[in-house]
Image 1 (cartoon, one colour):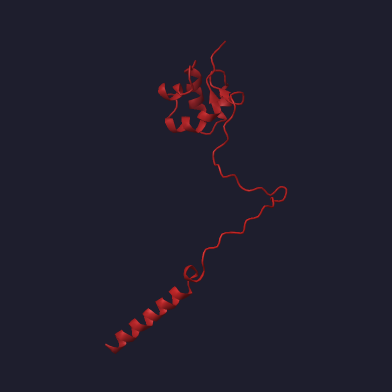
Image 2 (cartoon, helix red, strand yellow):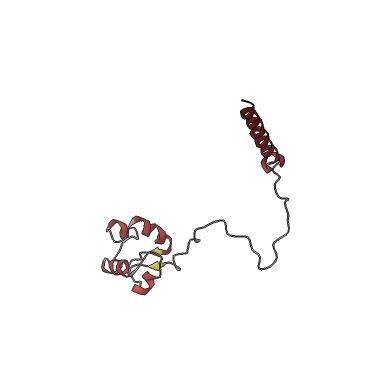
Length: 121
């Protein structure tokens, strides 16, 4: 019995010592000081938006006139999908890539901000 009590007291003391010395108990949260200074040239803060900025219509690729190589430049568009896109032309709207079952929804979402479906004049 004495051996069991001594072991429990030692374990409790050790646990209490670890808790008392942990940084979360010892330090309080303090935000970084605010600075009005700008970062040095060439040292910019990382972008907070992970998505690519939206392109203007002039910068977007027209799926009705794009070459196979231009289509294959998109992530997720390979040889087969580019052939299917070309074979399914013309498109009145770019979302027809999904409704005509040319591309899966996930692949379309990746490239939808970078493409347009313009109509011939």
